Amino acid sequence: MTLYTQQTKNIRKTWLLMSLFLVLIIGLGWFLSQYYGSPNILYFCIVFSLGMNFISYWFSDKIVLGMAHAKPIEHDDNPELYHIVENLCITAGLPVPKIYILPEMAMNAFATGRDKNHAVIAVTQGLLQKLNKTELEGVIAHELSHIGNRDILLQTVVVVLVGLIAIVSDIFVRARFWGGDRRNNNDSGGQIGAIIMLIGLIFIILSPIIAKLIQLAISRKREFLADASGALLTRYPDGLASALEKISSDATPMRFTSKATSHLYIANPFKKGQKGLSLAKLFNTHPPVEERIKALRGLEA
Image (cartoon, rainbow, N blue to C red; front, side, top):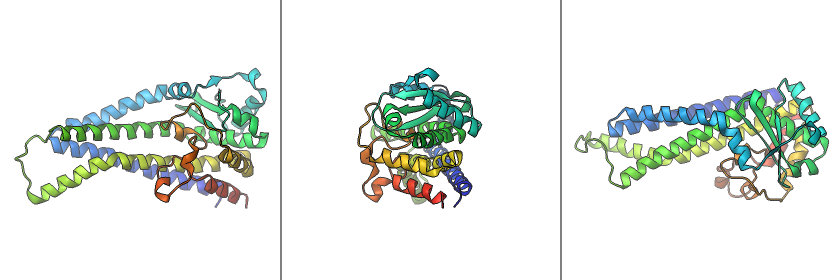
């Protein structure tokens, strides 16, 4: 498999998952509108999701950087890092993003922002101290690929959609628990109607879980794509592969992180989530590091 075929494959799968997301939201809104006899519920779901996306579009980077206690740096603060970013941006045809340092000795990095002209790359202090130049270039190329592939906006949209589905489902379940009901309980559609309604109720309850799994699947696909794109950018896949080996073996915990933003990092900041049962791996934000390293080294063959 070449770099280009891996990119194409991951892009296709990501947009398929995004389509499933939209179907899930529309299906959820449609069922609730039918259940309560009000099409306004469907309209509300759509308008609310657009409003949340608008807020996330403009302020998501500031929120994430604040949560991570990130500090901006200028050229004179770390000339070597700045030159690496600048050179890779020239190769990738991207504007130079703002650069931040995370006060963490754990090795990690992430990219955020609403588009390539308003992007940010953040790396930990530990990453700068423990990786050599080739490995650091691999990590920076990976994060620049997230910017070039527009993953930073996609991931924000997905997080908002997951939150919306969870909120709507929770409101419905609470309404049912406290005695809320459809507009007319006597409007019976017979046995078939009861079966359809039962299926709809199950769908409502399972929707947040399904949405979360779709989010994580998209996150994992984008990591593979960024690995391939980053290797294409540096022309040296082993640099990133070596960096991932060091990052995965580093046991230093991160102090300032949360599960809400863990999918943004190049590696799962919660080390305990990397191993476990196959079912538990479905809820990991990142693909197994071993698979990523194998794919990268396979690109050199």
